[in-house]
Image (cartoon, rainbow, N blue to C red; front, side, top):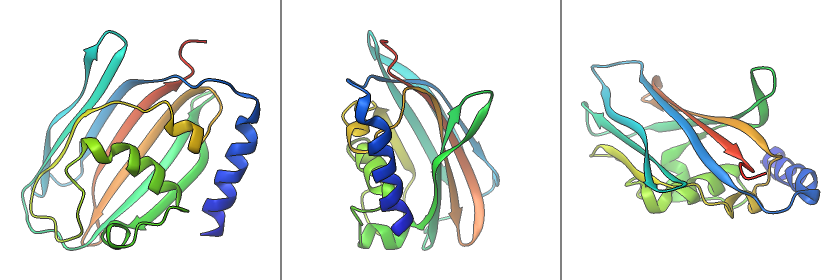
Length: 177
């Protein structure tokens, strides 16, 4: 808990000299580790308007209901390859949905996805997971600032104590510089 707050404050200090933030999706890849449990028929980026790219994901869950979900969320920065950067957190998603914590870094990233995803309730989960036309909000990075560059966000899903899938999302920050 203290680490998340300290990390956000550290990131704010790093960003003190950076001006306007511009973000853009570059790629998205999805993988299921157990095809008998879930399949991902849609995992792609779509140009919504010139310069506006939306991420789309449809995870079809074959064994419902899901009562226990954990999420591992990590941020990687591209230097000479991708290296861990600031955040690598695992949380009980069912508990988080009952008790969202605004001091947790996941709160900001999930809040950015909330208008675009159908996962807006507590467990059990009795439906597919759909993320539709998710556009990065440039203002999100004024709350959780990061230096300009190329980044990879990895989200790993764990249900009933077993790794089920991974989503890699690649983005650039300050693409207009």
